Figure 1: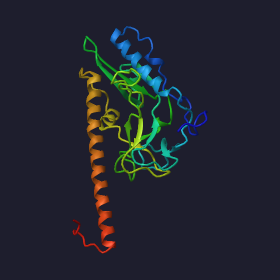
Figure 2 (figure 1 turned 135 degrees about the vertical axis):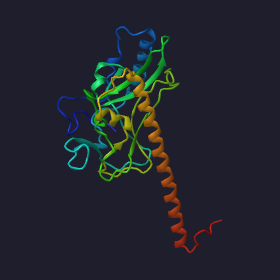
Figure 3 (figure 1 turned 135 degrees about the horizontal axis):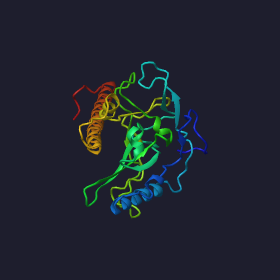
Figure 4 (figure 1 turned 180 degrees about the horizontal axis):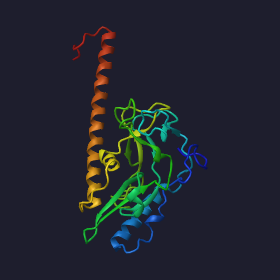
Length: 267
């Protein structure tokens, strides 16, 4: 939920705080094909339609805090923490940044770019995708850290999701997402708990080694990493669901024992 304007506490100097995505990067694409320009117009329209009438400003449900735990991979930097309790599957926050086409120069060195949506290929087979990049401008969501290496974190507690997809809505094409952000996974989040996502193993491979110089197209690597992340998130969700079922069965067993029903005697 948005607040009353201004900049949230803990916001870094040198990064522009924005209350909604900046879609100016999807206007007037020099040298782009007609299909690419049409795709950009569709994405821009979908995003702007989603945000039309929505309240912006600092998000009251989360807090930016410095990470003081020396064992945390982001020690000395910032993380995003819950300012209240969140229920399972609850929407937490939209990810705001600069909406730009894949291949935009700023994406090469960005650690804050999310794949937003893709429209497929044009007649020449060129891929049209878009990214939401919060390296230069964004909101609180840019501070959600990866769960890997965080002390006590066995898995993420939020996932990348879409609050509202534009497929078939208001004339938007099926692929034109209207939002991207974070949704709570199965177990819910306690007040004061850090929000942790899975950025995919490919993200960390990219941080620990230089980009390949073997001629492989960067877009192909990005697609492979995205597929790997989808598979990993699916495995995490399946594991959580199994644990949830197990916990429910154990609670049922305990309740039956408490009222004198022998274990295994259920009809």
